Image (cartoon, rainbow, N blue to C red; front, top):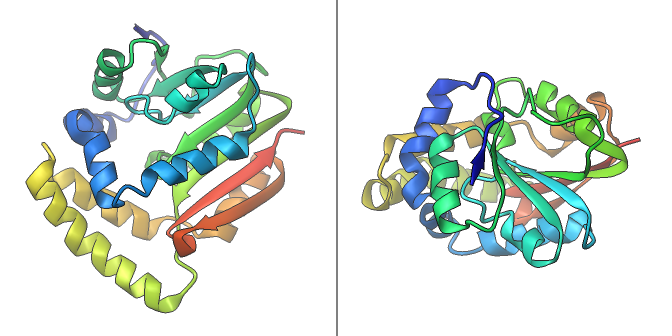
Length: 230
């Protein structure tokens, strides 16, 4: 089921994700050689959600990142701004509640979630500092934010090889397996342009979160940021 809640979304990016929804999960697995499953497990562990608590999983896509919470007895709301992703998710995972939502204008009351999570979606939000502040608004005092996002490898040699992989291997995979290969050129470029770990931590603090910390995964290819709502 897809619930209403979408006010005004950035149609260009949303339409792009609509076009890749059908094979999105497959592409994630191919691009990361299956390591994305381990990264998602790390995010779930960082949230430390308990049965009966409520988690907002924003940029949930087809719900793959939401399923571990559901299986653990946590009430999870899978939200995304791409209606194509939500439709695909609702058909694959009908046990999840899917909500259409813009990250900068969430259709939820203040302080209604124990935690907010976002995996690989923050860099697609035009005004991501506003989104981080909006996440704080809907989180209960003492609640948790966990953002799993592509970042900057800490080793220079790894960073050079990673950039070459982004601009060559990912588009090649997309041409073979994706229904919208051009979208993955944008995704590769958005990863390169994204702030590094320290700058993202600063943006999270500026949005009103405290106890901000991060952990590098795969040498900094991905960084898992965690913070608390005061």
